Length: 142
Image (cartoon, rainbow, N blue to C red; front, side, top):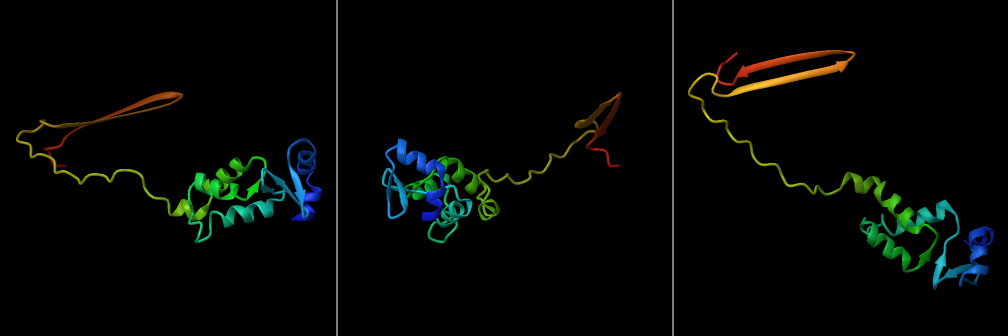
C-alpha cells in the first residue's frame, strides 16, 4: 500500500494542498488512512466491511460508517453504494418488504344469467388498429 500511495497523484496533491499528512509511508487525512486509487485494495476493504460474518451484510450507511472510522478515499460514498447494491449475496437474500397477499375469496353464487359480466377489450396499434371484444357471463358454463 505504501508503494501505491507514492504513485497516487491525488494523494500527492492532497499532501500539498489539504491538511493531509504522511507517516510510515501512508497518507492520512483527518486521522484516517488515505487509500490510493487501487481497485483491488478498495474492493478488499469494501468486502471486509460488508461481506464478512462480523460485518453481516449491512446496508450502505452502516458499511460506510465502518469504513470511515479507519479509511478515506475520494468518492467513498459512491463506491460503497455501488458495492452494496450490486452484492450478489445481498440481492439473493434480500428481505421482502411487501405485505403478504390476502387469501383468495370465493366468488358469490349467482342466481341469474348475465348478472355478472366479464369483458375484455384488446387493442393493438402497429399500422392497423385491431380491436377484439370478448363478453362472457360468469354464470354460464362453457
